[in-house]
Length: 536
Image (tube, rainbow, N blue to C red; front, side, top):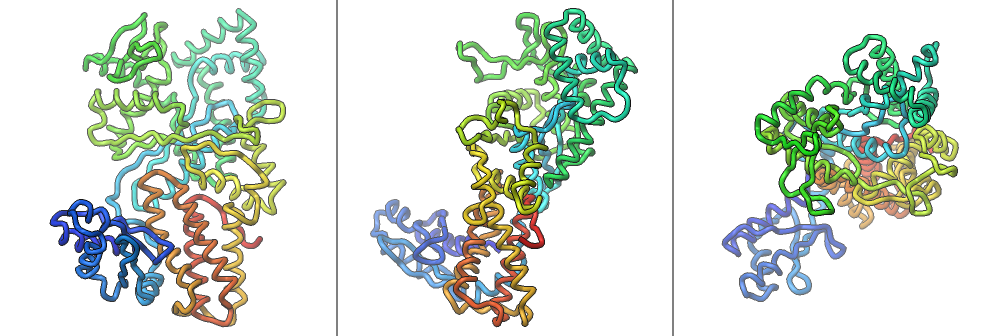
């Protein structure tokens, strides 16, 4: 149960009685008491009365008997000390999702390109998106995961023509082979006029349904998807092949996008291209900024595909919420996309959100690169995690927690030594707390019993545990997994203090509190997609 919300509800009634109108009690955890509210101070300024006088009246009116003791401190703060009986009663309840009205949520994340390996640039979208999908599912929402693959366009003309030049590859391709194919095709496309012409014609053949071209393209897609799934499984990501929806799946809808937007008076021809100019968007030159639906050569770019995907998710999938977990530099694109969707009338029900995030930086503060300056492959990153950590679960946990414990909007520095440290705000620290709890319970001579709070360290741990639901609710509401990650670290710190001060093995009550802590940490780590090893 959300203890803060319960206290806030009781205070809100008293504040409204004093003010004659609703007042937000703003109840927060405090160093001076279990919880504190400064609402009486703000109300006193509004009513022109001494704040301590207002605080005293609110305290007298608040229906807190049996729930908490209220005291006035400083200029008029309301300090709330929750009754031990209430804490013990709430601890006996399992951690439950925040009460929400269930919605259909389509969440778009990861989004790699076919014929290219997953790399560090996909890391944050994949990890943050998966954590949000897990949290939203736990909260009772109908979550539709979508992996919007880059599987269409000019580059496939190059790749298919390269395969044709080599007579078609024999046997299974590795993704490394495909990366090599791409690099070779790119070089030939840039330096060989004949190859460039044939590659462009191959694109036309592919888009026209030419069977040999489609067969080679499908092989590239299938092989890439197998490797993506292998990386996702290794990283503990819940995306599967059934969640893949490539750009190719929308190609037969692009002409109808143009027709519909034209029929609604939204299309404007500009230098031969068909564009939409949503209101309020201008370039650096001050001129209106276009979203190009069809290029001057008659081809369709990613904006057209994104519009088709938006329409499909809003109207066909009947989404209530549309989440796009894509890097912050794409902010303008998505704001324009959503504006066009609203102008077209597609978003009368669905609420779109761009879940932007910062970059992964190296120790030099620049984009994380290999020593040779290349892009860091995800598989290589996971291999290094395995080599550095005591187990794959610890390495994966370190990578994911380092990302999820940071505010997603900020960049963060990828630092192996800090990430893998057994102390501090790290994944291994939390995993170690769970392993320690498992070891304590395995060695105990008694079964866990009802909790009795006799020591301040026990009380602090109990209060911290009961902050789980509001932390999870905030992570879901604000689309910020770090709110839950930070709370789990607070739980682990509170448990460490309890462990150091309070003998556990001989006390059924403390074993009960220990077991409760283990359940909370395991649930929270699972919601973030962080594995818990059996031992450390």
